[in-house]
Length: 498
Image (cartoon, rainbow, N blue to C red; front, side, top):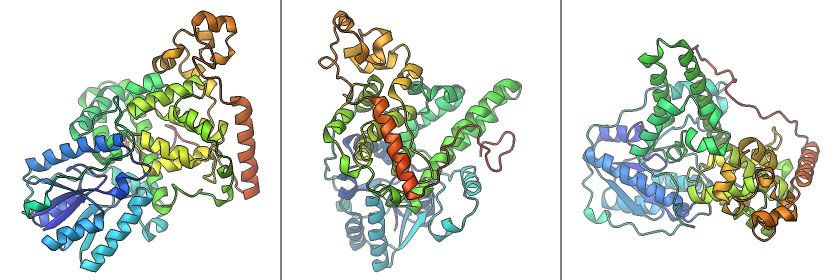
């Protein structure tokens, strides 16, 4: 019997462990509901509901090929031992996981169990990550990534022989109550939805993507919305790259040079972001305690002793008095998603204007983001906080963001109904309304909508100064945070995306 352990890889295509196991013999396809993961402070009911939909899709795909998905609840080593006691097996197949500290510790315990039982654990790399000593020896990681990304996705096995394990193993899954509630506006999970979104994005949305990603109004329908499916491995980077390359080679573009060039530029812009994602994974692989410790220890003690619970609660609940921040938090509460610029703005406000240490905002946002990926998440936390070492903190002016990205107040009025009657001239800074205007529009600041928690200009200046002083004291030499479609891509030909 070959045991295939599904984790953040809920698919059958481009799944090398499943393909290898199916070729080797009867397969037990396994997913574990682990208390150490589900009850952790970065997991939520919205994650669980999305994963449930993805598991149902995976189960159907396995059934079509003759197998079934076995789900069990408990700690991984204990459940593997339970299976082994019923039917000893020689090989455990899975992908490598670059996740949070809980998954890292879990994998070490599983490795110990495998060693004890003489089970070979065959782990396949994914997301372009290079593990261990080999990673430190690689000098051209980007070229290695491009080779991986442009390689052909692994085909799904046509037929899978089931293990025939005793039916008593396939018992009902004991429920684990994750924190929070599901989100009514979140994307639905499953492979079919992932393929639909990918197809729609590559065929129609991609041309507008570079110009649509900043404003929360255009980003909602202009972004790919594939991030939750990438986060849980329903679809892979290689599958997306294959779809991108096929789009470039489509016959209708061969006769329209201008449209072809526009498409290639847009696809390259998106490809850069896939590379950045892979880079965050590689960084997390080498620093598994990234979710707890400052990347640069010289920044220790900067914010830890000054955490303001009241400020955190107002930020968490979307009641800071800054409409763009509050609207973004309300959208996040409803959908489990906001675009990257809004993520940066709400995080910048928490860490800089409110001077909160990054750990508690990070855990809250981890629970809120349906597309939460620890590697991306904690790297971003530290970049915005200025604790990442080589780069300065990222700061967003919430009033300027509202002026530039929502000048007519469409986004703010949608998510903050209390402000719908506020005149456009005051919507980005409603506290500036004269009392006569407040009375005329029926919005009394401090009663109908909160007064600002802080003076954002003064608080932002103090934060930048304190971070800069800490960098100097720690001897950190800064470099600019750069990125974008203009970056040179290693090994790229005129039409190549990877």
